[in-house]
Length: 548
Ligand SMILES: [Zn+2]
Image (cartoon, rainbow, N blue to C red; front, side, top):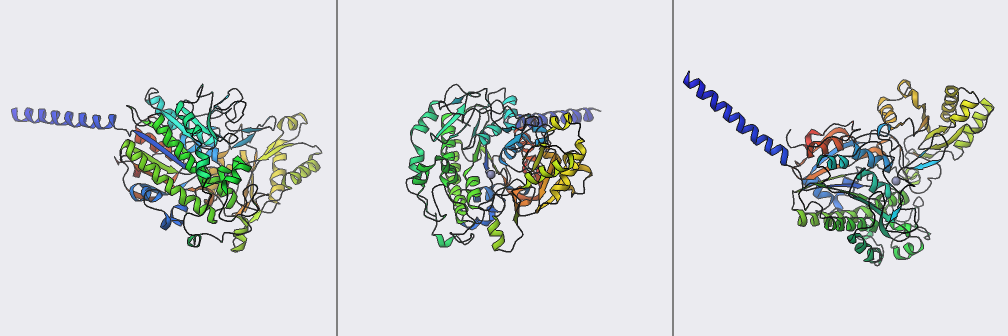
């Protein structure tokens, strides 16, 4: 009897010691800083296409030390910047989080609405400019950055940075410390009165140091001898776009002169990424990110990969050089973080908001299927509807491959909306390059492969999307895209993105399991032991968690 009691007592003590240790480890363990790096328009294959030319501290460091999800897929259409950033940080999709495009049409007026426009706020850091009149007001759900602020009773600092307003604002959520983006005219990083009354001193100091002049002074030549760019097409090909004021797309570029002609061109140069990461370093210093008690969160979008990608397209030496230079900039950024916070004390994830298609001319030159949609698509549709229903102006517009109808007019004329949509579908299916057209409220019953249906349903926001959606043939591009390229469709070139977690407690490895963009925030929530964002539909990537 006595032996048994002692045995029980021993068991109880052992169990309570174990659980105390367990609790201690689970409640106190968070990284000092989370850094989300979103490389705009980065196709997954760029990790390997240029792998042999990357040096050790940038992309290769992430791949060789971190965990790479090799089949991370976007699970909605349209695959564009604003939605990508919102989905990464909300774990949700346009149907729920409300960011239905970079722009969408107001379904009542047909007026184009920009995702972060906000006329109720003022620019901060620049007078009389619209470029700062922005906020996350159109975003309907919380972000992982919001959840970190909520979880720490707003003691965590959250900062969003990009050249693009939307890519700075949407990741930072509704209640960050601040978000900063560039004002092209002045070449300064600015913000909005939604966040701040005036720019912090460190931002003024950064702007006043004239960083752009320094970055452009040496021109843009290839980082390596140009004959080594064997991964890319010849330098001078007909399908590349050109910088404003230039008539050829060939190295070397006089970027200072081009910038003087049009300040917006900085975005298309690799130095736009360098500037962004320099500013991110200044933010870490200025706000002491990761250097105080609570976990902080910094989101950085490198946007020049997107602008250069649109202009020159994936197979160009220009795009390759933009990535090789970004690789150097990332290496410098990571070594700065090592110095400031200590290697292993911060968590990095790198991903992309979308990919991009090859240029039409490149596809033709290599015998791959491609084409351009008709530029008369809207006109043809209007004519057909006019002929069938005897009424004009039944369409408000076409945006994001979606047709928005003039519902008020259709109702006032007592027309059959279902019939209008089915005539629209038939008319669109007769157009070259359109593979499917579908009434958005009848996607589930359409004869379309189910992975596409799910992406369509996820992307369809009842209040902000058009009622008929069209899907182009693989490799086809919108009218007007005869040079350079674009993105926004379901195909893997636009939706297969890199996703690497690295640093704090992340095991080294890879997974080829299909995971979705919506899983990123769910995984971050699990790593940080905080609540998932309130529209999150993703699940944690268990391979990345160290407690599996
Ligand atoms: Zn883009």
